[in-house]
Figure 1 (tube, rainbow, N blue to C red):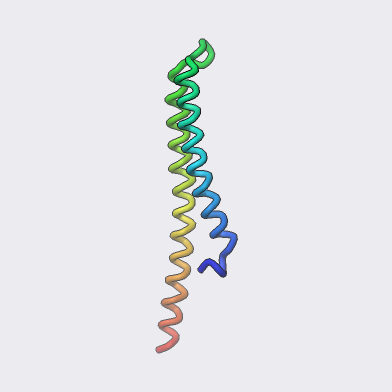
Figure 2: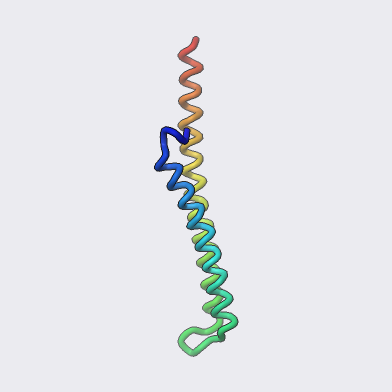
Length: 88
């Protein structure tokens, strides 16, 4: 699987890394805004938004990575089934 689709495997790994980076940054921004206090332009409630967006991007990027993995698994299973049917 990996030898045929190196770019897709690289994209999958990239999306997983992006998922955890975005989740971590969302949490860091949450803490910075919460601890740093709010101003009239950016109230402390904005920290909840940063946390929510970080979580949403984490789920989004991780889902994309898992869908790419699913597509690769489907391709591998289809090829294996084809090989088994040709032997008959």
